[in-house]
Length: 368
Image (cartoon, rainbow, N blue to C red):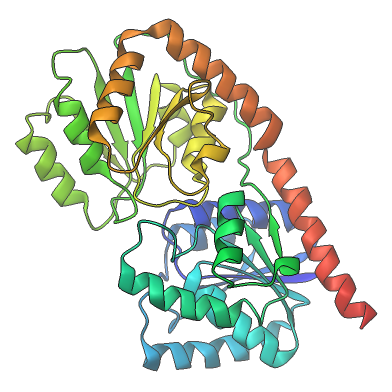
């Protein structure tokens, strides 16, 4: 099987890590190619080339809606598909998914699209939501399969009629196991949040909650980069937290950073099924996260961590205080989270279910 993976950006992020794991898992089972736009020297490009995967740069494939560039990107994709002649394309991210499915249908190539959280989900600005719905309703009827990373996203797609019911499957994200483990009982506890400084994440909510807990012993590491980084730094300084919050930037040693912490936090405005939560559970950390998207399918409230309503600073502060003060509770929840990771969120489970989708789509083509 020859598979062409398509994604808009190569920057570090959940969708990019997901694609990287698919490349790593399928390179020995198929001939795999990667088509990527916008970033000529991004993280995913570098890692794919290190694996020996042929990378194809699509210079007109950009994240914003730009009709002039989008038409050129369609032409670029058309030429790429004719050159590579894939049996299947697997697209990730909204723009690559939309254009990729159009080109695949035009050339008679089978296509799969993974929705890493819909751009019309709750919490997304209204204008962006309307545009995303229109695009997904068109593309959903052109593609052969959609993979939703959560049951929440499947239900959302069906409710908004963006894809026929028989074309959508749920495959929870998975992450490869590592040897690094946290010691949640260590005090004073270190908290960590791994997330881009971008609109879907709510770093400001976390900082404001922690500003009310200055009398307790804790520290916080923030891992990631993005357009809102300077704004969040300024807020930390303004709240008097500059001595207790570290900004670590983009890191390749996230597993080790998680293992050095005692609590994982992810404050978000909207989500799919975040890999960072699965990585924290893998490390044996209790997770405090906003109850959006498919988060509650990973975090069991009161057992593996706590779920917080979107934007609820008071509840977030209350739950963090409980975990800061109770090392036995941290250890108990961390152990439960590790067991849940082993049962539901391994990379092997995700890859085998993805392979089953590929084989089904390609088999249907041969039958016709």
